[in-house]
Image (cartoon, rainbow, N blue to C red; front, side):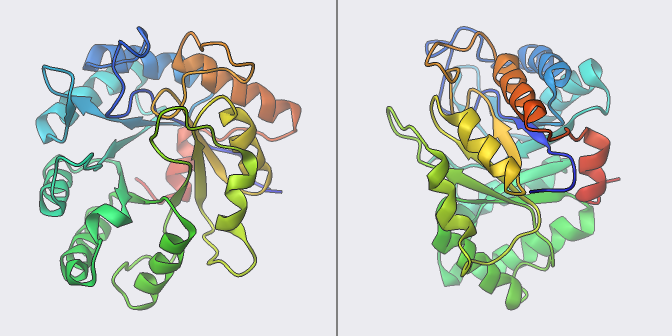
Length: 274
């Protein structure tokens, strides 16, 4: 059981889904700002932001991130941590991903280890990038899609490639596939007794059991991420009307379990932001 409050992050759009999947999926800055305000009121402390091009396709662009971040800040002030994605989605190369982060200089960023340093030959550039992240005061969160990636991250820390003693991580339960439905037991391989221990970890999950998965994670010591990027449905299988409804459902469930929620100020302190 965690002794500190739980962070709820919302991932409201991702880079794959569109309004054809859900009419309330936010695409542009104004829609992201409205979603941010709604999710803040529902209990979120962080928003994980993807931006799109004019055709609605996944985009990594510093100016687009600046527009989205400005709109969100106007709507919620500093009451949400804004985390951008560096996700490739098969479109961007590692050097392009890292360049956008350098240009955007975000408050926080998610980094997929398997994308940015897939091979040993990629490690020097990744090490330089992580040094820059630390100097700039950008909060990194490493995305881990499989337990073996958690093991590799620990090795990169040991060798100084990742120069953070306590690095926030995100355990992804499942994959971006049609009808993917994650279950709470999918978390167990990440937190098995023989696995590396990360003191600041978060979980996201796919499908209607998202609430069950992240609640289990929270009760075991983690933070949680929910939203339309990974799931469109409420626990009973009905379509969620909004991202805020998913945040609210998790917030209510954690409240019943006696788990208090963290706000953005607490997350910034935990991640040493500001």
